[in-house]
Length: 291
Image (tube, rainbow, N blue to C red):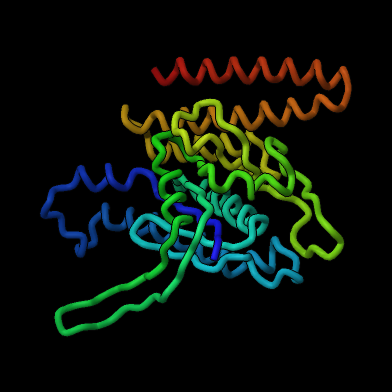
C-alpha cells in the first residue's frame, strides 16, 4: 500500500550529548537531563496534540480524522504516515509551525512509496525489555533520505518521489496558502497550507523541493520565532548555518509570494519588484553578519 511519510529530527541533540562525559549519569536530576527532558516533552506534546486535536480544530468533521495512520516517536525523532496527500500536507505543515512556535529546532523530510505496518509492542522479558515498532517501506526510506540530504536549516525537504502527489492538486509554487482543485463531494480542506516549492540551493539529485510550511503566518512572524530560538540556543560555528539557511528559505518563500502578487497589475508589480530587491538585500546582510 502506498503512503506519504514525514520524518522529523530535533536538531542539536547529537552535539549536545557529545559534549558530555561518557560516564554521565542521566538518572540524576542534572540540568542537562532536565533540559533534554523538557525539549522531548515539548516535541512529544506537539505530536500528541496534532494527532488528537487536529480533526476538531483544523479539518472538517466530514473527514473524521487527521489522515494520519501512524505517528511514531523515538529518541529525538518522529515519523508520521498518511495515505492522503492533502491531509498529509496539512498535518506536516501544522507540525512544523507548532515545533517552531514552541521553540523546537527541527528539520524534516518527506517521501512517498510503499508502506507496511505490523505492530507496536513493549515486552517485559527475563533479561530486560524489548520495544518493537514494526513499520517499513520505501516511503520511510525516502523521507529519511530527504531529511539527511545534506542541506541545513529548520526546513522540510521533499524527496522527488513525493513531489508529483503533493503538487497535483494545485501545481508547483502556488503558496500562502494555495486553493485546491476540488469537487463539491470533497470534504477535505479547501486550502493547502503546506505547499511544495522548488529550492534554489539543492545539491541532491533526488531532493530538489521543500515544503513551504508557514500557512497563514507572515514571514516576519516566522522569522521572529526563529530569532527567538537563536537567542535560546546561541549558535556556534557548526550550527550557525542552520539559522542562515532557515532565514534564506523564508526569504525565498516571501519572494515567491510577492511575485505572485504581480497578477494584481502594474502597480503591484512595482511594489513586488521593490520588495524583492529589499529581500535580496536582507539576505546579503544576513550572510555578512554570519561571517
